[in-house]
Amino acid sequence: MVKAYVMRWERLTDEASEHRNSSEINVEFDHRAEKAARFKTRASAEYECSLLDSFEIKIPTAERGEHLCKGFKVEELSPSEFVIYYEGPFILPKAS
Image 1: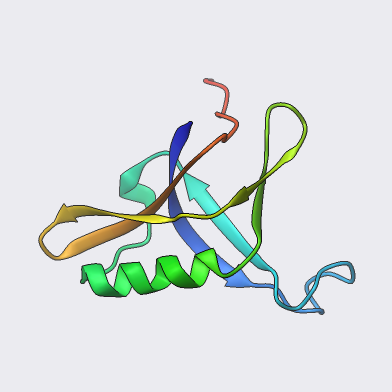
Image 2: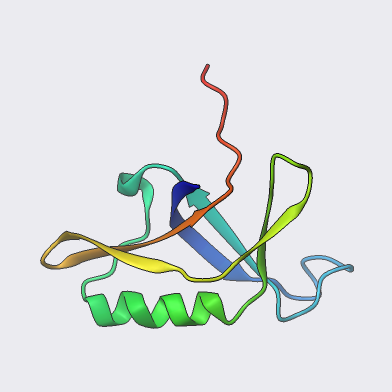
Protein backbone atom coordinates (compact mmCIF):
# COMPACT_ATOMS: atom_id res chain seq x y z
CA MET A 1 0.00 0.00 0.00
CA VAL A 2 1.11 3.55 -0.74
CA LYS A 3 0.53 6.54 1.52
CA ALA A 4 -0.94 9.54 -0.29
CA TYR A 5 -1.90 12.91 1.17
CA VAL A 6 -5.08 14.80 0.35
CA MET A 7 -4.20 18.03 -1.44
CA ARG A 8 -7.69 19.29 -2.24
CA TRP A 9 -11.20 18.11 -2.96
CA GLU A 10 -14.32 19.47 -4.55
CA ARG A 11 -17.84 18.27 -4.83
CA LEU A 12 -18.84 17.66 -8.43
CA THR A 13 -22.07 19.07 -9.75
CA ASP A 14 -24.18 17.97 -12.68
CA GLU A 15 -22.73 20.88 -14.66
CA ALA A 16 -19.21 19.48 -14.14
CA SER A 17 -20.08 16.32 -16.03
CA GLU A 18 -23.22 14.89 -17.58
CA HIS A 19 -22.23 11.42 -16.38
CA ARG A 20 -21.56 12.27 -12.75
CA ASN A 21 -23.93 12.08 -9.82
CA SER A 22 -24.23 15.36 -7.90
CA SER A 23 -23.03 13.61 -4.73
CA GLU A 24 -19.65 12.66 -6.21
CA ILE A 25 -16.43 14.26 -5.10
CA ASN A 26 -13.09 14.77 -6.81
CA VAL A 27 -10.04 14.32 -4.56
CA GLU A 28 -6.46 15.15 -5.52
CA PHE A 29 -3.68 13.17 -3.83
CA ASP A 30 0.08 13.63 -3.62
CA HIS A 31 2.77 11.44 -2.07
CA ARG A 32 4.43 14.47 -0.42
CA ALA A 33 3.12 15.73 2.94
CA GLU A 34 4.26 19.27 2.14
CA LYS A 35 1.67 19.41 -0.69
CA ALA A 36 -1.24 18.37 1.56
CA ALA A 37 -4.08 20.60 2.73
CA ARG A 38 -3.41 21.83 6.28
CA PHE A 39 -5.65 21.95 9.33
CA LYS A 40 -4.96 23.82 12.57
CA THR A 41 -6.56 21.21 14.83
CA ARG A 42 -6.76 17.43 14.88
CA ALA A 43 -10.52 17.71 15.42
CA SER A 44 -11.04 19.68 12.21
CA ALA A 45 -8.92 17.21 10.22
CA GLU A 46 -10.79 14.25 11.73
CA TYR A 47 -14.09 15.89 10.81
CA GLU A 48 -12.94 16.21 7.20
CA CYS A 49 -11.87 12.54 7.26
CA SER A 50 -15.40 11.55 8.25
CA LEU A 51 -16.81 13.66 5.40
CA LEU A 52 -14.40 12.10 2.88
CA ASP A 53 -15.32 8.63 4.15
CA SER A 54 -19.00 9.38 3.47
CA PHE A 55 -18.34 9.67 -0.28
CA GLU A 56 -17.52 6.92 -2.77
CA ILE A 57 -14.00 8.01 -3.67
CA LYS A 58 -12.44 5.59 -6.13
CA ILE A 59 -8.88 5.41 -7.42
CA PRO A 60 -7.56 3.37 -10.35
CA THR A 61 -5.35 0.39 -9.53
CA ALA A 62 -2.41 -1.11 -11.40
CA GLU A 63 -4.63 -4.13 -12.17
CA ARG A 64 -6.90 -1.78 -14.18
CA GLY A 65 -9.59 -1.95 -11.54
CA GLU A 66 -10.91 0.53 -9.02
CA HIS A 67 -10.35 0.79 -5.28
CA LEU A 68 -12.91 2.39 -2.96
CA CYS A 69 -11.16 4.68 -0.47
CA LYS A 70 -12.48 4.34 3.08
CA GLY A 71 -10.54 5.00 6.27
CA PHE A 72 -8.87 8.39 5.77
CA LYS A 73 -6.46 9.22 8.61
CA VAL A 74 -4.85 12.26 10.21
CA GLU A 75 -1.13 12.87 10.56
CA GLU A 76 0.33 15.50 12.88
CA LEU A 77 3.12 17.51 11.28
CA SER A 78 3.45 19.87 14.26
CA PRO A 79 1.27 20.69 17.31
CA SER A 80 -0.89 23.03 15.21
CA GLU A 81 -0.54 21.49 11.76
CA PHE A 82 -2.43 18.38 10.64
CA VAL A 83 -2.92 16.70 7.26
CA ILE A 84 -5.15 13.93 5.91
CA TYR A 85 -3.80 10.83 4.19
CA TYR A 86 -4.98 7.54 2.81
CA GLU A 87 -3.06 4.30 2.36
CA GLY A 88 -4.15 2.41 -0.72
CA PRO A 89 -3.08 0.77 -3.97
CA PHE A 90 -2.09 4.02 -5.65
CA ILE A 91 -0.24 3.89 -8.95
CA LEU A 92 3.07 5.63 -8.37
CA PRO A 93 4.14 8.30 -10.86
CA LYS A 94 7.10 7.33 -13.01
CA ALA A 95 10.37 9.09 -12.20
CA SER A 96 11.45 11.56 -14.85
